[in-house]
Amino acid sequence: MKESKEESNVRIVRRLTWIAMFLVLTNVLSGCTGSDASIRPKSETHFIFDTIVTVKLYDDHASDTHFSEIERILEEIDAKLSRTSHTSEIAQVNEAAGIDPVQVSAETLTLVKQAIQYAEMTDGSFDPTVGPLVDLWGIGGESPKRPDDASIAEATARVDYRRISIDEDAMTIYLTDSGMALDLGAIAKGYAADRIAEYLSSHDLNRAIIDLGGNILATGYKPGGSEWTIGVQDPDESRGTSIGTLKVHGQSIVSSGVYERFFMEDGIRYHHILDTSTGYPVRNELVSVTIVTASSTDADALSTSVFALGLAEGLSFVESREGVEAIFITEDKQVYVTSGLTDGFQLTDEGYTLIQ
Image (cartoon, rainbow, N blue to C red):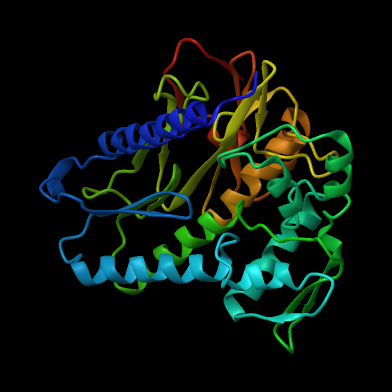
């Protein structure tokens, strides 16, 4: 049975409620102890990139001016990279697909180049031209639906990162075929977190939790010098709890899974992580992948692409990347961690089994 608009709205509210619960969990887990326990975080929350963004600064000299600049950075990035704003640079590139190159800012050009690099290293499991499929399925919107096979095949034919033409001298991006569309949703939040972290570092604000809808970047150490403790979310959305915790400093923790955005039709769950080779949601043994690494841009892009690779290939891929670790959760509630997390991850939910 197809999900009604009312059911979709309820699910969206549940998702936002879960995020709020996760923020509370993160706040509790990362609370200050020790000699600097008197330092309380200064925090602001925004709704941007279609998600809740919260920045918590654990420095006495953090001010309203800093938060105002953070908001400006977020709005600037959204204005350039949003597909839903007709005036954004990405929207203009998409509108001119198959017609003309579009001149863009250095920031947009650089991020699209990075997205192409991720596509190349994952053989297209990550593909920034996934826009036609995203639009067709409408997952996360008001009227998601299971498209017919012919429409899926037609949209899939327009997905190919190799048909992005970049002219660095002219600062232009050109999608060579009509109907192509860039979608940077699987990398933009991570990039925004890194931009915020760079700004904070330049103002000697070195202790922060930057949270973009559950994408976490923990800078520096907690007041008192210990590592941050971050909860790894339970893929069972109804619980709003973590399955375990990580000790981190100066690292980003980003998860992708079947629970984030989805709809039900005829008893089948259709989620938002799309297989760019078939046009359908990825179907493998995984329900979530969490990436841990220094760059939130990397973590964001890799969480999606590694999920698409599946357990065996995903584990192998992450183990081959220096400075990147991952947690894989399967449908049968088994948890696999890469070698660098064997001591850093603690399973706390007895309903899951850690596979060593």
